[in-house]
Length: 156
Image (cartoon, rainbow, N blue to C red; front, side, top):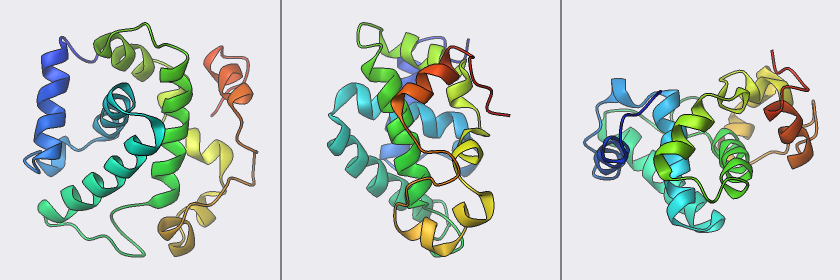
């Protein structure tokens, strides 16, 4: 279990939004949790807008930069928002706590997932960092995400 309570999640999100979350706590898991929280509270497009602006301002608040080599990454952010939207949309009856813990325990939460869809060199390029680019290595679709979730397809 990743989180013990919804209050723990809410505290993380409050600190993130208020730019008080220490850099070392802004982990992959924290990014995914923030996306789940936003998609639990807002529609897809509002969630994307809020995540983008909040990641950018958070990076700056902890002394980071957002440029063509570091910080905010448009393609990765949109990619994860789409993956998490698929999961949250198919699990609407779950509480925020259950959504977070269950999602973080799936293959869909793997740090390796973007590399399944994207060539890593291209993904880390300034072009992919600055604007959203569709995956070309494997085409993204929700049916494939379902197969990954059911472990019919391995991402490693």
